Image 1 (cartoon, one colour):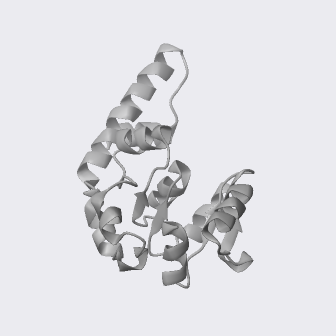
Image 2 (cartoon, rainbow, N blue to C red; image 1 turned 60 degrees about the vertical axis):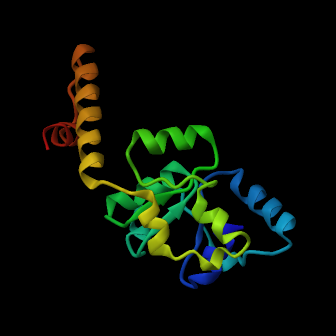
Length: 165
């Protein structure tokens, strides 16, 4: 319900479907919530660069999927993850991206009135640290380089750049 309300409150926003099961899931949500999401508000990308270029024109990304939340960081566009499963939650936390749990008090206080949640308050709730995000990326890139080097494989220039930044 929150994502439906978010799209309604921000007329230029869209829902990006990321996989073959997303449309049936969306249709089930529409039936359960007794509402519909216009086709004009739905997008699907099969090419990463097209998706990334599209996202870079937006002011923010709010999503329940890890790839949807991460793609905004490439622009950079402020991105926020509201994980709906344990795996996505763990990835978001370990990657140090902004995460707000779906059972957070900001949602509980709103009840069914999701329109009352201000975007700034939602992002503030995530307590994102760019420094922690960057440091985590360096640590992971260095580990990845060590693994590649142990296997006799040369790390890419991009991995080396992240590891040394």
